[in-house]
Length: 359
Image (cartoon, helix red, strand yellow):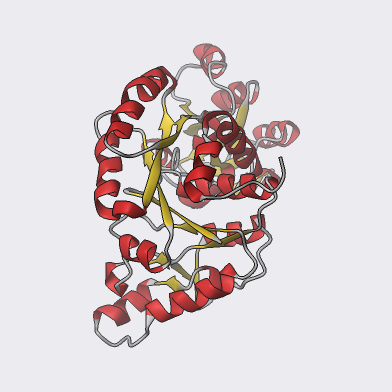
């Protein structure tokens, strides 16, 4: 049985996507796959219990029988963190982690361990990433999101902290115009420093997209129509602040977009609905006319009514792009295609001492 611990030096690097993508490939290759998120010190609290959307999604995707509390054995909510900081917690988190690991490992060929928000996580409960890797005898793969002058330091930081546990890295979200540089300059440099690079993955607009439901949640917006389209993905954001004469040509420049504009701009609403628009975000808490609602219903375009002014709404929405949840089938399918094209599975199998059971 093999354990692969997927970590990163920062948030939103692609750990969850990589865990899901690798797991689906392992399953396709005939391997029995398990999953666990050993330590999460930023767990939410729902119905009085820790909650992690990544863990819930992995459980569903891989059809895992273990309960969530086993798949995420050390999940620290804000309330629990306060108890720990006050010195009132006597829980043996290491023992809890090891017990969960024994349960997850039964009759599995490979276990995917998903790291937390960064390599700094876990010290509060004496379970930082390097110690977890050593404790569970896991081999570690680090993910670094491409940033021109920081990606090298991110990978080498992981190498320094993880030592011999680290088997290699993946560079993620590389802009198309920098792909050749990443493959011909960055990859050789890092490999000369002793870090094999298993994949240089391109920045993909679809993977940066955000669901309409996430936008509605972030804006605390009222959904006026097409509630059933909340899972549709928005790839671009456009602001409708122009004259009606130029609106149509402007909106045609971007497909699959959200248009933000004032609720009283019916002319802009109609122009947006004539193009590839995924949703309308109306600001100022101004209700649209019945004509606009009717057109949007016919076109299957949700209208979100936000109380914010347009500038504030834009600032909120922009924070979601590139930081959206991965739990959409379209994203999974596309990411798995990218892995098939860009990821060196042969080298990974060799590093893990694994063999596919089906060819």
